[in-house]
Length: 296
Image (cartoon, rainbow, N blue to C red; front, side, top):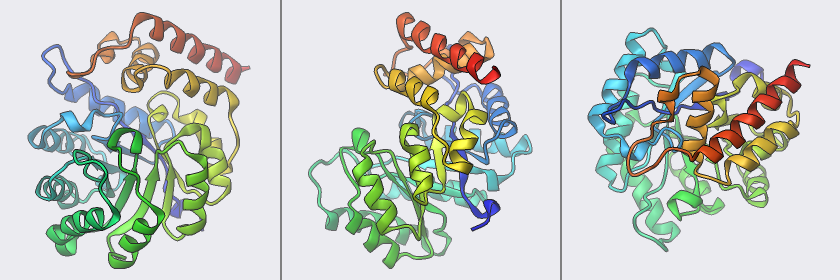
């Protein structure tokens, strides 16, 4: 596979909010451009890092249209969908696909717990059925720490067999290396994306095609050797070790605020709260040291 055919690096774009908790569209567009100009192949809107479940359909449409109006190609945009009803999931996915976006990161429903593969298969089949012929570029999202639902290897196999024109990949944010290894071995014909940056280089060496990454909001250029060469980066892994000790979304925003010198980036949408000052100082100190090491 040539490098141009690989998925590469997508920023799990963090979403800026103003003092009234509305989306700050100008900041969002500028940040998306920065990510694309500094090594990202695409941006993914409304994912976990982007506080997607707190963003309604009207706002989603407005931000997507703003990026397109700013000249960002739809082929460089994906959108996350984390909904419980088939109707809502299909509507959000359709919004992106109608606009020509590269694809959709589709999480399983998360309200009901202890659901089995048959129920999950029926839910995904309902979404694909509602989308009909437009269903394409669907990346299944395995993030059990958030959804409390793990996508089993058997379920992924059933979905890719039943919907070969729709299911194209899996983003694995399980943080479970044993699962990731098995996923790569069993479903290497799909685009496998590594959500935990600490496993990214090793996953690429086993055939992973890249990442949809929260850290790409902060240091995308630092991640390129991991994405393209499978090269380990202990300093970046150490920073992620510290990031996951606190609220991750707020921590990413704190680092973006530090990188840009724009404190407005620390704002998160309720019910989340900004990163405590201690987290801010710890993370930005590590980020600064990592930057100095790279410069040296």
